Each structure stands twice: as C-alpha cells, then as structure tokens.
Length: 164
Image 1 (cartoon, helix red, strand yellow):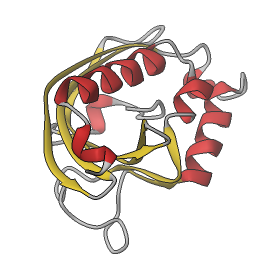
Image 2: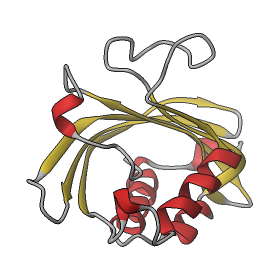
Image 3: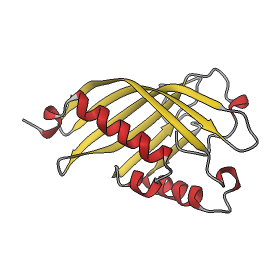
C-alpha cells in the first residue's frame, strides 16, 4: 500500500492547521519547509477559477523559485506593503481528501482569512483551497496550493501581497 493511501483526513487536517499557524505567525521560512522542491502556488482569477495558469491571467502563479522570492520580499523591511507585517487569522474547515493517486493526495478545504493592517479596516478573504499533497519521507508536503477567492470583485479587498 502506498504511503498516501495510509494518510487519514485527521492527519491532513492537522497538517493544514499547522500550515495556517505558521502563516499566521509569519514563520515563513518554516512554512517553506512544508513545500516540495517543485511546488506551485496559485491564486486564480475569480472569473475563471478552474482555468490553467499557462493560458489564463492569474492573480498569483508562482513556481518554487518565485515562492521563495516572494517570502524573501515579504520579510524585507523595505517591502512597505507588508512592513510591519499584516496580522492574519486563518480559519480552515470542511477538509476533504477528494482523490488519491500514488504518492499524492488531492485535498480541498474552505478558508476564511482575516487580515488586520495598520490604518486599514479588517479585510476578509473567503474561498476554498485546492491542494496536491505528497508524502515524502513519511511526511506530507505541499506540491500544489491554490487559493480560490469567492469574492466577485477584488478591488475593494486591497493588496493580496501576503500569502493566502
């Protein structure tokens, strides 16, 4: 039996909760350790959430190199959009394993991310995550992470400079 077939929903939930805690605490270097060496991070446009980033404009379509560069920029004090860092609180719910394929799991979950910024109102980003998780060395890792935002328009939501 492959390692992915042994993974339970509870283990996936615990993994996603740990990821959320790392992001909320701005422990971005530790968050990077959860990613595979070929990881991708996408935030598709809200008018075409099921499109492919290869031929559709996405809000964010990062490979592992751009993810690492994004983290480096977010930690830099000259990154005015996130210095001091936003305070965020993530709520994760309805975690489901929707497919198992060899060492990979397709996982979906709902999210609500509340963002608090100096001199700004509270912003709420609501949507669902689509993950491809892989078992590597008996640990879950993120190979693909998509944050699909439910809002019909994003202009009033401000910058999505932080990691949803």
